[in-house]
Image: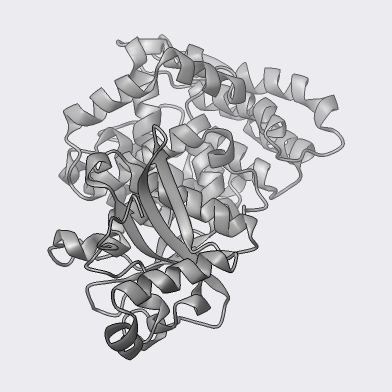
Length: 444
């Protein structure tokens, strides 16, 4: 009552619009009867939604319940059921004027997802206004807007050409360790950056400013607990490697390869993005050509601590393997390079510690090899690159889709605001893969 006021929001709706047929709503329930219907739902012990409080005062509302409680959804050509899977539906927001623009809608969505999951829901649906295709007036925002749900991890499940789309969120965690469960603030931050970048609303200066502001001492300490070595990595080259790692994760989340990946592949790519330069010791004057091997060695120690299973021999092998991998370097013309003579043994060691083709093995292999293919030789040379025969011999073709996505995102991260170069490097990388592995089709 305090939040909705005497008018019940939208001139007497009381958030019952989708719970009734249009005839019932307009002829019988509009106004005071709608208020009575909402009251009866609460009296019956059913929760019609969630309230957000600020300083002890109701500030926002989200309506969520199993989809069958909203029969009018199926009478909408745009919002009718996609399939027969049981889903919960988010159909309404209301934020008090005094609290708008403070991110309460996003917090309500996350709370609604948790509430639905805790009550047995696997899928949560939402029906936001498609702001990418048309202008959205304030009254039309009552079901939310596309960007709010995109940032929360929802995916478009049906777009029937109208002003609204059907979006879905899977509440059940993947079987693989999820970076979001370990570093939720970091992932939420970068997801927001990726969305703004895709929308063209993230200038370069804002990107660097937001990164600098996000990484407080407290945030750095929290990440260090999950990823030992993070603080040391962030200190090199006045934070250049830290900024690049965030740009790499942003580029990954915004990439077509990530969009086309399965849920499990996305989890692997996210771990690769945050770990791929962890061992980098770059200076402002010189590139670190051996950092991929050192980063892989660190990842081999970290992944079991976050839930990736190792083989029975992991404890026996990890110390010797990590030392061999991090020390496999040669000095050539004043530069320290990775020594590819050790690659076969390093790859065998990964299989021995984690199992061939295992998720952890795939992550470490991507980190280990992301600097091993000389895909842009003239403009961005890779001094320790494998020749074609070595690449075909050492790199399992089953790894190539993930490795290609990693190399593309790594390159994209350096060229986020130079689109011609970004697209040229992408084409050169894909052409290289097609030339070396002509029988393999990486991207549809």
